[in-house]
Length: 404
Image (cartoon, rainbow, N blue to C red):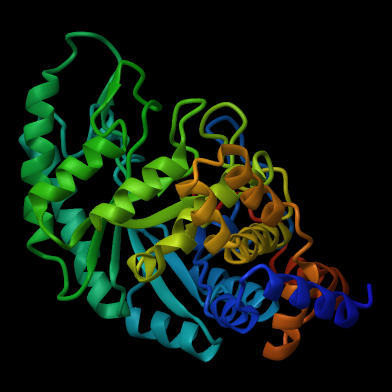
């Protein structure tokens, strides 16, 4: 592809459509997609973990891999950590290791679902002793946030019941609110608590935080540092995620995303693969919100089970970049005019036109200006990093696990 000529033609067309191309490029250069430490190790599904040659065995190797993905993409400058999977004795050393490789430590994720003691829940467990242990673990994660200079505590709970009458749903709600109030008091200054939800699984009668509305109501009770985390795979079929995003943005309570894709339920597939138009719709709402979306955190949360770990992560990041680019080139001026005129299909076509635009020349131009590979996937396949780490690390049996 002669991307320079294609870019010139695209830039001319976008200018005619009321799009400031330089402003779009600036926003693309500022995009930030956080990758998860657990995505670089041998995490998988609830049923089987297929070990991958060269999969990271510890947090130091996970940081190295995250830095490599950032080097190729230019938009993945932080790595989320999971405690205790990424627990170390010296968090200053962890932070320094990341800084030396050009990235930062991002969100801290407590593990509240793997221990046997959490069989009946963590912070909603009938036993006060178990609840206290879960709270102590989250407080520990708040302390770790301070040590690694993280501004995000990311919370997902497997808590729920499998049978009617197993426990009091209202009482479990009270336990959860009480526990989160205690943890909220330990948040570092200026940080945020992101509260995730999931409408089913692993509990099948009810989950204690089943949807965005429950997380939103809980966040309102806690205070301004509590916001909702939207996992794109944690919804019933047919749910309009863009609608949820727009509502939470307008309320100032959209804290961030766990980005993935699904065909049926929480499949944790590569974001943007099964329904790229849905991802585009989400980014349109974010682009349209302007400064209201300034502090939203974007994090990948996927289980790369049969895919090569590094390439899967790179594809995930680039799919988000592509969706964002298409959202930024929407002719919002014409869109608004047609909306106000009641031109239903005319307004819809504005979005379709942006979605169907080939933004590869634009992204290549942005990458060239940032000194990045024009084609990150081709660069990955050509540079030998994956073979190098496979030779050095070998085939680890396991490292981490699946996350909600």
